[in-house]
Length: 119
Image (cartoon, rainbow, N blue to C red):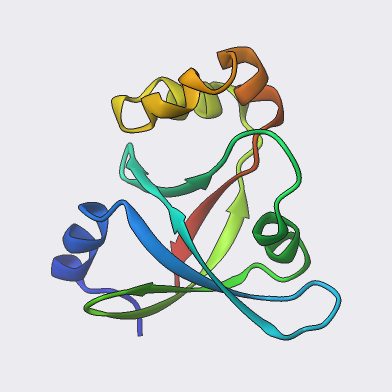
């Protein structure tokens, strides 16, 4: 069941969540704690440049479950490759930590980034 408007507002206020993905090779469930951000009305998961199992898993199977204290919500991950939007994500005050880790142009060009769309 997709989140209702009240749940969407509550989700937007949370920074740390758990996600469950399917292993790209094993197909086994994999659950990790991760940050996400609510930028321009969109739920975004990103990271610093480099290989990320969660990202590889979502490339193989975009189905994802978001786990928060008030429920679990099924969705799908959509890879964000638009450099203009990627730059806006990394210059949003919510994500300012990332620019202390890597140069902005490198983040925009090489960081993993997906939008979570709820079914």
